Image (cartoon, rainbow, N blue to C red; front, side, top):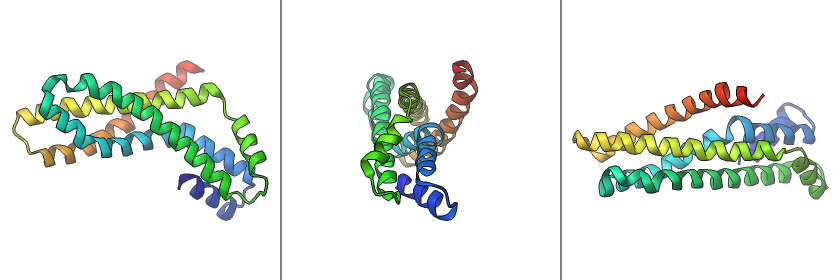
Length: 176
């Protein structure tokens, strides 16, 4: 969906070439929206399971959940990248899909891809750890599980935005 939307907007409304549109798609997916979008959507789906694990295991819940969240974040980001690229290439007005894909993939740096995958895994792991810690304290204070989940969705979104800001200010600065 993201690939389709970006390419349609860039080639249609903005009147850009298909090559530029695909490069814009890769930039958006790898640098701007990919890791944060994947982390927030995964959190929304996994949060009830994380809470259930806290109810069952208490303080030990993070031992399984946090590493698993990191791996899930990495794999979901990889699927998101592939889906966005395939969707974008299929929508471009050029006839040669193989050449279009090859041109696009040749422009992606391996280090940039690995950094994006790691960022997504780190984001989801941090969100998982935060949510489980907050769920444990909320359960001890007697709050209902529905209220805990709704509060943690907002907190998780804010944490994801804060992590993105920290990543941009700290890690991107150190990498340069």
